[in-house]
Image 1 (cartoon, helix red, strand yellow):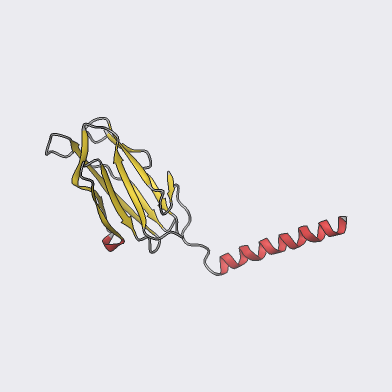
Image 2: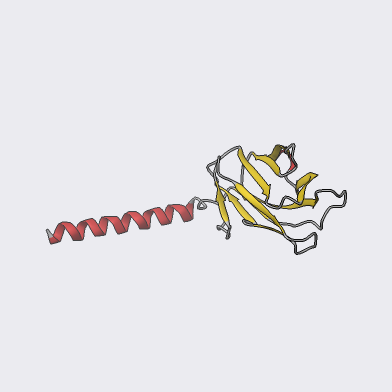
Length: 152
């Protein structure tokens, strides 16, 4: 019994060492993982936008940095404003350098929800701006700049 246990442990150790060596040889699974506040999946990427004031520090997100799982494609990202006195501007979410990776988005009819489809074709980090305004105003609040990490 003791011999079988020792042989099993040795085989497991060698197998794990072999996997680690192969990962080093073949470049691993991509860039090192960065900290994210939420790892998003195909039907689970909801972000709350909290507004306490129309100032540079008055707009925040419950998940400032989201990682889109590298195995997922066409992930719907949904931002929702929590305060009835604020709404998204027409360009509520502007993703810098996203090109055609982020498509099909837009603001809802009540200006409280903004959606974007993320193709997530490969690793990439994208800063974006959240643009909100008081409900009965045409003047936008200062933008807030969180991050989306694709291929996480």
